[in-house]
Image (cartoon, rainbow, N blue to C red; front, top):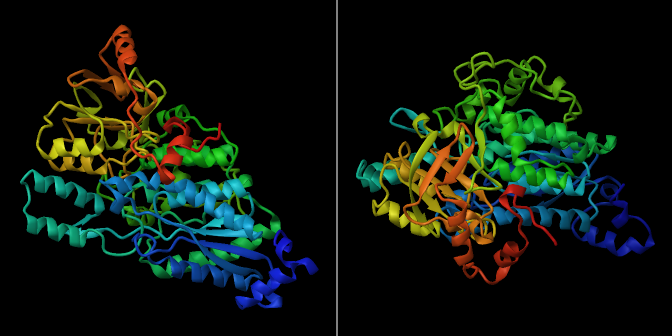
Length: 555
């Protein structure tokens, strides 16, 4: 056992003494030590119930011959961090989550790990740690939130962000806004729609690192979630016995499956950051061009919030991820030979799965659209890449030409939007919000939601070197690389420049000659960094481009 390093021999007497101080017995120390990384906290709704998940995992480990040892992980609620300087931290915290798990797991020589996340950056951070450590690992998430109810319809947190825009536009009053905000989020779980957290929890299942149901069983369906957690505790002991490791599971073919399902479900654009980062830790190279390649031949099967009216609970009732994968397999789009934490192959896991609610999960013969949810655009604004959630763009905005309204921060853009300075036809440009420039690559849910609430989502485009929430809808193009801080052409755009967006043809350009761009480039001066000390300053120094998953580099 790996843990023998801290348990066996006369030179480890002091080590054993420290274990005894915590109440561990000699018998327990003879068993494998299973690290249980629990991201429970009292600031993220998706994490407030994770103690119950951890308790169930421990039962499963104990019943199957292991000694569970719990330790924590940090987490930031993207929703609460949204719209202020706090949003500089969530993406950067992904690396902290991965690094801290590495430190604790190696510092104590755990034999295997059970990782318990639920929300946005915690899920990919844990998967990055799993791939990096490459010891037997399973992920059990906390599950999605149920949608709230308002005036007879299902709503979620994205409804509240949009309601704020409607309020500012005078379309609803303060009492209505208050009523919406009180009923949108009814309890524990990751926000109810196909936002980043639920996208990544579904991707965990597709990659084979989580059990079937991991991505869709609601947190409020406590019995099913606790059962799944007990099974995860049991399964980790089998993975350890058979020495099945994350890199055996997270192969190039597994990432192909994940991207395919992501495209079919219209997942968050943040997967274009997280999946490459996880793959990087697993020794697999994924380019954003690969996302676009897969998207072009993957049918779009589920129109979920924010693009549609359905939520994760509906997907679960419709057959879950297994049903989606089984349907995609009919078109030969799933790699069925991939290993999973179930001990079975993907093909074995999805055998017999059926669509139970055809209005939620469409068939490959009658998809919502013949192509997938995410598009990668290039042009003289984004020479390396940019990303848009095509499935959430109104048809009339798939091609758009308009004058640039340029802002050097999200805060400045929000002020202009609330002051009603943005008009139909405009293209809002928000720059110096990339991984280095932010630093931290802030999500832009506030400006996009306010624009939607004001009724401008079908006439105004927004582009940024920052990123967008999974709850974003509209012609919102993010991840523009090279970012402004690194001298990318987005830094050269001036007020009134004409921007041409063509999503079907995958282009994004400013109508300027190369001569004019060169002239502006020579005159451009890199602004002083926004943060000069602390973790974010170190992060800005080390972080790579969004085109590379915003992973940390060391040379």
